[in-house]
Structures are given as structure tokens and as C-alpha cells.
Amino acid sequence: MSTQLFRGSARPADHQFRQRLEVAAIYLFLGLLGIFMLVPFVWPFLSAFTTKPENVSSLYLYWPQSFTFEHFANAIVGRGQALTLLRNSLFVSGSSVALSLLVCTMGGYALSRGTFRFKRALMFAVLLIQIIPGTATVLPFYLIVRNLGLVNTLAGVVVGVSVGTIPFMLWVMKGFFDTVPAELEEAAWIDGATRGQTLRLVVFPLALPGVGAAAILAFNSAWAAFFLPLILLSDSEKFVMPLGLFRALIAYTNLDYGMLNAMSLLYMLPSLLIFVFARQYLIKGTMAGAMAGQ
Amino acid sequence: MTRADNRLFFLLLSPALLLIAVFTLLPGLWAIYVSFTDLALAGPKALDYTFVGVRNYLRLLTDERFYNSLWLTLQYTFFTNLGQFVLGLSAALILGRRQLRGQNWLVAIIVLPMVIPGITQALIWSSMLGAKEFGTLNRLVGLFGMEPVLWTRTLPMLSIVLVNFWNNSGFAMILFLAGLQSIPQEVLEAATIDGASPWQMLVRVKLPLIRYVVLLWLLLNTIGCLGMFDLVFGLTRGGPGNATELLGIYVYNQGFQYFELGFGSAAAMVMLLLSLGLALLYVRLMRVEF
Image (cartoon, rainbow over all chains, first blue to last red; front, side):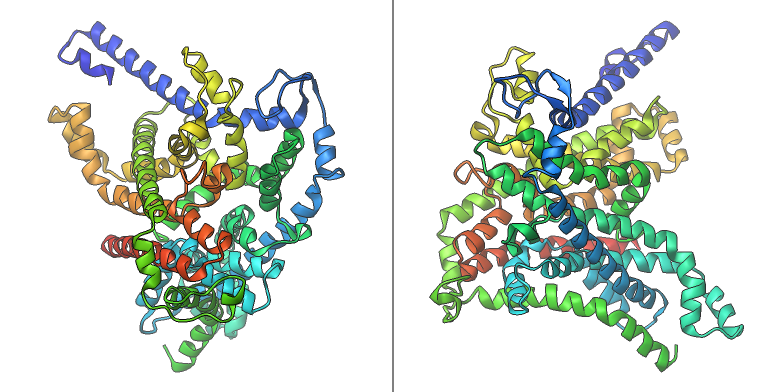
């Protein structure tokens, strides 16, 4: 950094100059980094909400002619079929989150309270499975799903997407249950509550914020799932949004980028909402995923 | 713990473990078997396949396209790790040390691309990397007097690496930021009193203290590059030619474009072993951290 140039000068004026230069350099770096991160988002908003001049391609930035909802209209009631795609996406994400929440709430509780042998080994095996990329086992996965008759069904996608999030969720849920003191449960037992009542009335309410955070994370990754729908789905009325966008994108001829971006913005909306309102959960969850729930 | 308790715990765990077993472990084991057969996705060899020994692996050893995809994956891994390290660490050092105006905003902006689904990222960047002089990136380099570049055509690897810097530097930053914030203030003060220059402070004090975090990030990112699919496939579909056919795309192509499940599984085995090795290293490190 430029501060090195001024080392050894002890006069206060120099020192002040040096500091100002450093601050300027820092702001320049951060400014450029911020621009690099944000500039790509200009085009989707511009092209989805405005009309373009004649004879320019909608693939590129243009000077907007007027504000319009026409692209959204095309996407929703026109040939974009955004509603079908969004409904399928919502079904896949909702179901797979529900499934993995259910099994991981149960499993996470068992991993948190249990003292059985092999628990440590089991947890590390789960961690290992979480890290291995799905691409590595996808070919036989396809065969298994086909043998179960689930190819070209949304149920097949739900199961696949759900299984993808289960190892991570198991770790996260175990971590949440670890924060609920076992003494609270024991107190409830002494008061005559059954195990089921204790879980329902004492443990789950306390672990609920954690469950919510885990659900948000799982939803965001299920919402983005592209690879499994790509290999499993072939009927366009079953497509989820990312697959629909991809198919439109590679169709090449006469691509209406305004409509495509309108669809893409509708698709990004949940992720953006999560980003605005639950960013801390996402960041913490990503950290927990990387550091294995620590 | 009583025996009844243990039975309950086992019961509670079984649905999760069953799902993992059927849809993750079983495919992994099955892939080993399939990689020694000539099983196909469709056609006569889909039903009537035979055991072919190590033939798939021998073919892999002589397949230039496979070596090409390995080499591309290596390049992709190296350059994305390097760039993310520099960008992520610089941002973490600056944002972790000072209270700047708009600090939270900056962290949020750098994390934002991570949240966006892969296919939308690809769509967004198809405009950024647009080949004509109107492509956003070409307009930017045009400000410096450069000629328009056919990004994904002539510089395909640089293009997908650049997009990776954009969408994943935030991951490096938040990990490094957490690592840096866990360094005790006294250590940094002691180094300052001893007259450490900013560079010495970074190389001799900060980096050694966050080396675990850096290593974990490196392993996770590398495994991520081995399995990379969505973003690169959405942007280039492995092309032009095979210029961006990373390992994940190679496996997909063998299985679902050429229908060769046996041969594709042999390639997937290589990917599985590489990532398993790195993942074991990661899990061992986590144990150290306990």
C-alpha cells in the first residue's frame, strides 16, 4: 500500500497526510469492489422495467425510453408462463424444506441428546457426505430415481433436493438443540410431562428461532436448485423456474430479454427478500456450514 | 441413558439416515460398480450391459477430452482461489479493522451475489460479457481505450473465473472477517508496540493466526470447483468447443449427452476420490478445531 512510501517520517503533518492517503486508497478499493458487485444488477432491472429504443439489442444496456410493466405482463400472462414455473418452484422448495426440516428436527434432537456409540463417527460421516459434490454421484442417483419411477416428476426433484440439504441441516439442528439446556426437559419430566409433551411444549419453542434460520437457508438453496431438475424433468409444464429460464436462454432465436429479465426478477424476489430481511441468518448459516456448526 | 432412550433416538434418526443412505450412499457405491460396466442410459446397453473390467478406466487414461477437463478444472480452481483470496482478504482486512462509514452496506453488497441463484447469475453475466461493443464489460474496458473483446469466445476461462470472483468472494470475506475478529486485541497491540509494519503485521501475525480458517476455506472452495456445474454450464455449456468443460460438465456430458453411464461413472469416480480426499482432510481439520 502507498503508506509504505512515507515510512520513517515522523512530523505530524506528514503523518496526517499519510493517513489521509491511506483512507483515500481504502475508499477507492472498496468503491471499485462495490461497483464490480453491483454493476451486473443494472441490466436486469433496466431491461425488465423499461422499453428499449428501436434497433438496439435488449441484451445490452440501453437508454430507457419509458417505464413499463409490459415485460412482466408478458412473463405472467403471456408466453413466459412464469406462474406455472413459480408454482412448480414453490412446490419443490416448500416440500423439500418441509421434508428435511421434519427429519432433521427429529435427527438433530437425537444427535444432541443421545450418547450412543458411534455418534461422533456418524456425525463426521454426515459432514463428509455434505461436502462431496452431488455431481460425483449423479449418474447412479438418476438410475435409482428412475427405478423408483420418479423421473420426470416433481416428487423426484423434491427428494433429491431435500437429501442434498439434510446433512447440513442435521448439523445445524443438533447445534440448536445443544443450546436448549437438558435441565429444562428434566424439570418438565418431574412435573409429569411425557417425552412427547416435553418436546412439543418445552424444547421446540426454544429451538424455534434456530429452526426458522435453518429453514430459510434450506429454502434458498432449494430455490436455486438447477442440476437435479435439469437431469430429471422433461415436460415443460413440470419445469421449475431455473430450468425454464435456462431453456429460454439457450433457445437463442428472437430472445425477448425484457420478458426473460422480468421472469428472472420474479424468480430472484424471494432470494432478495431473504437478503434484505434475513441476511444475518444467511451469513451465519453459511459460516456454520463451513465451520461444521461451530 | 436407558435402552428405551436409545431406541427412541435411533427411531428419530432413522428417517434422515435412511434418506441419506438411499439417495447418497447407495449411488456412491453403485457408481463404483457401474464404472466397471458398459451400462448406457438408453439403447440396447441400457438393459443388456456387461462387466468390462477396467476398460472404462483405460479409456479414461487415453481420453484427451478428460485430460482437458482435468486441466481446466485445475486452472479454474487455481485462479478462482487466488482471486477470491486477494479480494476476500483485502476486504476483510479493511472492513475488520476500521469503522468506516457505510461498513454494513459494503459487507452486504459484497455478499449479495452469493444469495442469487446460479442460473440468474448466468443470465446477468451473459449481458455483462456480451460480445459486441455494447456488452457492459466491453463498454467499461472501452473507457480505457481497449478494443471490444469476445469474452466467452476468445477468453472463456478468464470469463468464468471473473464471474466466480464476483459471486463467491463474499464467502471468503465473511470467513476471513470472522477469523480476523477472533484475534485477541492484545496480540495486535503487542505487535504494534514491537514496531511491526502493516505488512509484517499481516504476514507474521494475522495470517498465521487465521491459518485454519484460510485452510478450511481453501478446501471447501476447491471441492466446490471440482463439482462446479450451474453457473458455468448456464454461461457457456462447457463451450466454445470444450474450452470450459470442467470436470462436472464432463461427467454430465458423458452421462446425459452421450448416454455412457459406465464410462461417465469412471470419470465421476475420479472426481469422487479427489473430493473425498480433500473432504477427509477437512474433517480431520475440524476435529483439530474441536
